[in-house]
Image (tube, rainbow, N blue to C red; front, side, top):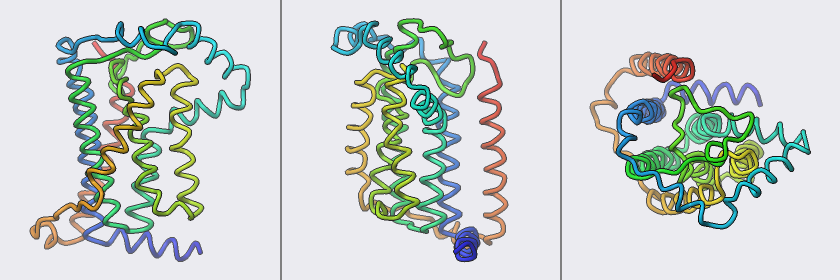
Length: 265
């Protein structure tokens, strides 16, 4: 079984179509990191509508703190939720892309996944540019939480929750393979993301719900859609594409480290 997995992996990494799509996901990643950095210069034009959200049920200080305290009372659940939260976004994306594109070589689902990410990033980016709300831990200054000082994310990226939107969309894409053990595990990881964001005070219930609704809408929009690869790329030697892909991963890793370690002014 391990030998078969290794053979599938090598075949995928020598496949023009797979490598081109893998680079597409890298470009999407670079695009979102770029927007996150740029947002510092445009968020002053975004309107804070947190006060409107706080008029809704389940947004009170008591509700948020009680939920967090109950979670902390059960340490195994608390640490599980923390682990899910911190690996849930980038981890779930990486696992879903790997499973669909590299392991299964399902180009149709890979295309839907890439197009879906593009639409999700575009919609969420547009919303955050126009209006924003702040997270529960930020609004109520909960102990143990600190204002984000890096470019990995922004305090205004809350409603709809990009975290939950991506997780729900991943499940939609993976549902085709729901009977396979590996897919079940990745689906389980994505399914726990909304609970982690809510129980830890990172998001309001409305962030999660709006993210799930957005994921369903995007899933319908991209269903059956394909990425048209220009013939120029198809004629490029596969070794060149592999080198470009490797450079892309190195650049992505460098950007991730930079986003985490570079302090905001």
